[in-house]
Length: 389
Image (tube, rainbow, N blue to C red; front, top):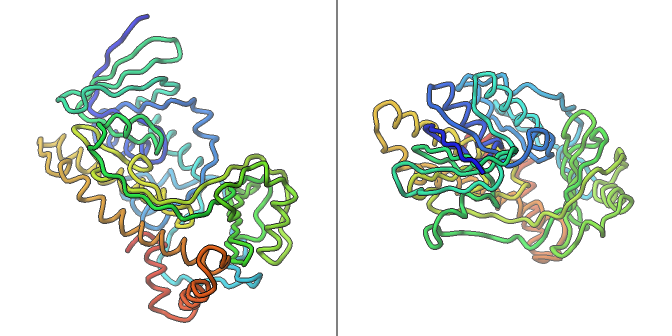
């Protein structure tokens, strides 16, 4: 077995939204970096994951000179919004919201193309990544490439962007981080169907919440509230389509279901988001329930905060922004955990009373009604939806 050693300023573990956004920010500002990704490029770019780029993300990417990554597969804007007991109740969000329904794999593909066009160093199929000496002056990332060669990349800083189950956070010593978590008590069946989205939106119903979200011109993400102990095998195609029609109160466009999984709803935050010279970004540091559609928002926010800290350090050796990375990110993260908790509880409580009872169901419906009747409530909802609050 041979071993090769490289040197760079920042090693980025993970080629998802957080890792590739960070890589582009750094590369375009003269900071060398290496991105390590355990999967193949084809796998990463085809992996279907939920995601919306809110107004904050759209403006941020444009400000960093990355407007090109916002172009992608067209997503039809179907009539819809919220459905309550089968009745359509669209919310009119009257603001400068520039949110885009951009499938996450399209954003990842575009960020990848932009990074490689600038000469970025992106290494796929990096197996068995380990991070060493993260408390020292020059941490190292060790991995095995597709040829079986052991490679070592020495760096000044490591950005852990490899998701909730990645190696980065597991490298940090036990007890160094505090985990704050909340389990919502129910799951979603998340399925991908090869069919145009019709209708589009979220349905609140006594049978549980349901969602039909466009993921491309001929792809729909299906969500159905279900029990924590449900399995994908309990949800054959006919049951999926039948439940969607019952909860939306109308016929839905049917097609092949190409994948399905059960997703327990939860919120998680790790504090601090760094240890030594290892910094956690995106899902490696926090999880929000999908109802909030803020996963991409928080990943991009972390990437921007960390990028500005790295640039300050690279320009004049000032580590103050790096030292304050967690303190800068966490208030923003908790603000959107609060939004995620609120919207998740309201949308589920307003439908199925089996979890919290009829009293909470009626309270939740009163809260929803405010969104349709109160200009102030609608404005706050619009701010949080756009990511500008």
